[in-house]
Length: 309
Length: 321
Image 1: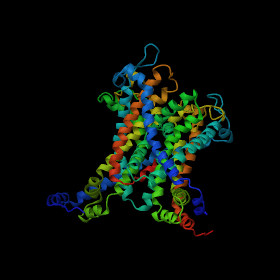
Image 2: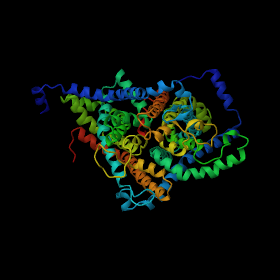
Image 3: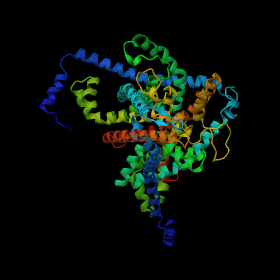
Image 4: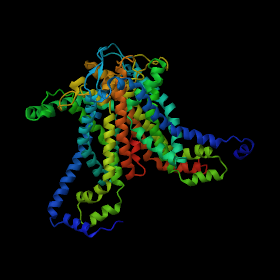
């Protein structure tokens, strides 16, 4: 610990003059301002949730969730293709993004203690903050222009670029939490490193990795900007991986551009579905984490060979 | 059994495993390199055509034969909205971080979750809510009163408010960056050693004085980094801004007053990308804006990460991405 010099002590003494009442008042004011900041931040969230649910529930019906959109401005039809598209795109980008992210996380945790590892980790963090619209342009240039048409693949590729750095970093963090003795125990049994990594360490780090993956899914399911120039949007159900497709955020955007009240109502409905998906994932993950202590002890037994069924 | 298998077959599986892992790790570097290269090479037509005028010019005309592209209003729009959002968002975020780092566990826990949920709400929903709910509130309760009282004295409030303008876009941005900045600031304030805080208390400091003499000086670098991280997010934010900024183009988009429609780099890409013909200069111009945006974002984020990681060896905030 740093020793304070004589000048420093004089400085502190000047701070603590005998005017205790004044200092307490300043303290109370500061606390009030801080509390005000918290309230300011909570009001928008409350308002968003309230409006989305209040207006969205009114729009939701079985037809709304399953039908294709009706004629523009008629207020009929639904967001069936959008829901289907969002689910397909999430699946496809997970298919690309999760393996790369997990392997990259393994690299960072197991082989990343060198210059290359540090470089990758740093740029991974920087890449995570790239504007998503730039990734959309990139997918447009590499896939849409190459194939000559808008397609689900382009959208999935763009979203996988958002996904894999998140998965990589959370995988790395959870792998690092697994004690070194697990690795040593596996290697001492004569297992090869990849067997140790996949069979022992990954299963011990499972809860953290699942969290990362789910949060990445929640993040991409709300992404709009990269989808504009990749999957384009459509009002039909799935017609092949090579054709344009609708997605919930895209549908909300298109509806927001229309001047009709009925379109607004449908937009609230779509927003409600989207926010329910995202909040369910986020709250579910947190609940899972809150109860992980018992899961961890089970994992411990399984990993250490104790069969406790 | 595994031992037996190993003695018969001698495939160097561990080497293959290491190579696959390394390739996946290097993937991110390759992607970044490819993005920078692609965006530059696809936009170099417009750099050739406009030269430096692309950055400092204000004309925006996609009509064939009279094509002219200057991105200055949009670059300024991005800087102004992000700057205003920072001015509003950073103090609030630091206040929240102060509160959470001091509050008892049963308040701090749920509050952190609420702030994280605020980060999880997608941009498009902020935009939709902003467009249909927040805009009206802002227009009648803040913009009109400001315009009516100060409109003639202060030029900032002089143009007639409409709700879709730089001011409302900045406020939405501020709301959106609060969770990012406050989550990272919280981590940083938690990382200040307890000894420092206790020493301040022992000297008789009040809570506020403890922050002033123990936490802020120690956490300064990290807090600046957190703020810059928020700036990076504000610069790249697209949908909510696109829906609220009013989407002006050309010299009119140059930000002059708070209540005028503007345009940012990301919003003009979102608005015009699909309509732009790949054969004309319009698409290269938009890609050029994307390239500029990318460079700005990379620069901001590199600075932010260097500052934050100096404070925190492991930044848990990544989970809240």
